[in-house]
Image (tube, rainbow, N blue to C red; front, side, top):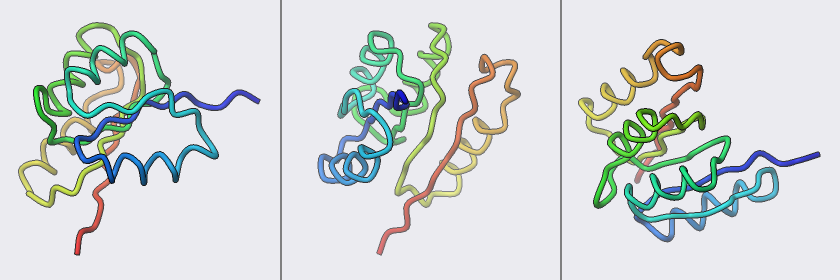
Length: 117
């Protein structure tokens, strides 16, 4: 059985390593990138089924990168993975998640907050 192809994006190398180690037995992590511009380029080149991305990254943040991907016809499912606890950021992610599927090419967006200590 073919594994789901996943692209990871986060500017914290340690978090990328942890997420990749958690996912790699069940999915095919096709690439890990550390900024929004590289996320856009890699997603367009690799066409993964799922993109797991941080919100706050250099060059383009996760929201901006995903917006560019959508405008370019990318059909990957999006998971926002973040340590952000700011209500405005969560509201923006929540609004993205609630955008009608028809406007996203039937590709849901999901926000997963990570608890920090």
